[in-house]
Amino acid sequence: MNDHEKIRKLLPLVAASAAEVAEEKKVQAHLALCLVCVTELAAWKGLATDLRTLPTPQPSAGLVQRVRSLAATELATEVERRWHKRMPAFLVVFTWAVTCWPVMWWMTGGLKFWLDGYSRVLLIGLVAYTALAGFTATIAVAMLQLRRRALIGGSHEPIPR
Amino acid sequence: MIESAIDWEGAVGLETEVTQLRRGDPGAMSALLERYQNRLYRYLLRMVREPATAEDLFQQTWLRVVLNIRRFDPRRSFEAWLFSVAHNLAIDHLRRYRPESLDEPLPSGEERSEKFSARGASALDQVWTGERAVRLAVVLSQLPVTYREVLTLRFEEDMKLSEIATVLRVPLSTAKTRLRRALERLRQNLESKSRAEDWQ
Image (cartoon, rainbow over all chains, first blue to last red; front, side, top):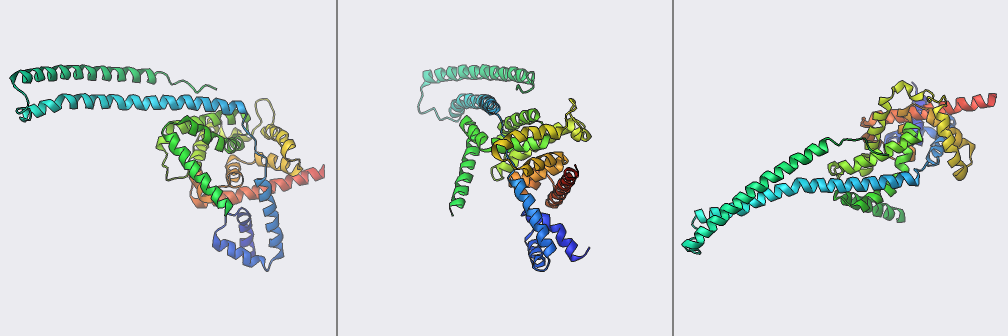
């Protein structure tokens, strides 16, 4: 393939503004000497312009509105889904932290200075009660999550139009 | 100067919208939809050629965007990501039908290109009366999908080669070769059509 042929191959890319800088320079240098390629490039540029100015088909207003409302519903579901994922984890951690912190404090002697015998018993009772409530809540949250997953897993329907 | 300021403003606006959508803001979704609705629909229509299918894929694309927006890396181009989502859906759709059937007539016996151009022609009447545009739209719709796609991404979506390569998930050199071949085939077909019309 001679130089002229090589340049001719580059002309569509130059017209599409997709040639590299070096290729562009090579083409420009050749164009100064070759009238055939000048004409050819003009034809490619005309085609490129026609392609750029083709009319744009537009989606119907009904379609856009439908997509908007479907997306809004999906977004709300997604946000709720995220909340449902995070909230139980937070609740479990929080409950156990609230339950364990006084126990740890008490065990390490932190309360000795603050509480007398009676309050200590009261505190232990409170801690035991909270631990039981926390344990029950953890089980309940886990069960709710399992149920929710089972429900979501069974509702993979095609997207409505 | 003014143009670059507008571009910058647009880019910042887009970034904000994407960030807000990641937080689950429906307003941001509306803004993005408004920004890209025509371009995305046009791209899908060029790909699948049937308005009903393009509408279906348009809907699916946006729903997928909503579902996967948190996986999108904000350092990358949202536009390229959006079009690659649409590309994957369109390719999946086209694969479901036999690829060789893409250029066959519709079950009704109607040519796909006729259907496409008929729809385009009504729009053309409103916007552009040039016969050349009608002929170009017809010839473009008759090209293989890989060529139609690269042409619409370059000339209608005004994407750079690197962005086209990202959307198509091909090396830059492949995108470049595909673009050149698509242009050559388009011109060749246009010239054949002109010759055929002159003969008649």
